[in-house]
Image 1 (tube, helix red, strand yellow):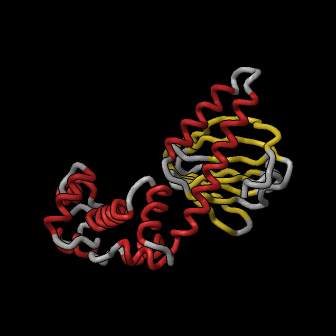
Image 2 (cartoon, one colour):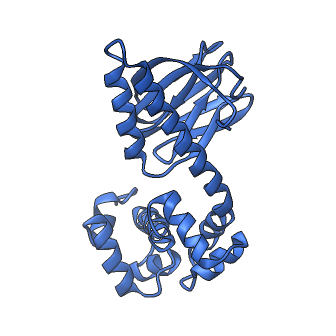
Image 3 (cartoon, helix red, strand yellow):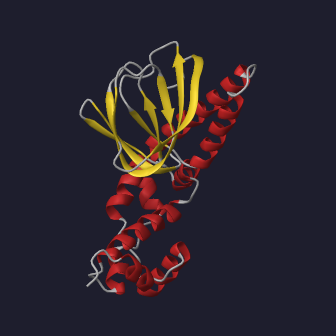
Amino acid sequence: MFSNITITDIKETFTVFSPKGRFEKIENRKSFGLSFCIDGQITYTHNGNKIISDKNHAIILPQGQTYTLYGDKTGSFPVINFTCTNPLCNTVISLPIQNTEAYIKDFEKLRSLSLFDGNRTEMMSIFYHILHRLSAQSSSSKVIMPAIKYLESNYQNPNLTNVELAKQCRISEVYFRRIFTGCYNMTPKQFLIDIRINKAKQLLSEGTLTINSVAMKSGFSNQYHFCRIFKEKTGLTPTEYMNQNRIYKI
């Protein structure tokens, strides 16, 4: 989406602190915006569509449009306001990203350079680099999206393989692993483990299942393997996590 645009100016670079419960209406936005998330979450609503801003998604904010936003979770959101020769979009757009830290580092460089005159060329170079990386990640993400959806629906299957995931995308296993790792900065196996651990956290917080049942429902082949991985990821045993985070304590 960025291949045919020419950036005419970088208007502002700033970080918005957005508390939970914040509601705001933006009317006739004066420029395009590119927003990242350091932590927290915002939901944008535009033309009846809801778009999530979090650490895994960059947001393009459309010039001349009116939309609302709501702070789901408290956090910080770096924003780059810019103008370009051709219309970029007329709606809020979400772009899946990986390695958010790299984008934040580039943003900090832009913000530092913007404090002094004479840095326009370097600022443009950094910003074009950001847009190029976003475009490349977005294209690759589309290729493996069928596998992501399949993972999210079948994470409980302890026998999931890269062969099956690559088959969903209609590409070779080797190509699938290379694209996936480039997009998410982790292997498909690591991504799947994160999904399973998050599901396990949810079940443990509910506090109604045994540890073995949580392991099975989260896609782990056995309780021992689950407990070992859970402790590695969270620093707590499943029992410790459940005791500290149980939603309903009697």
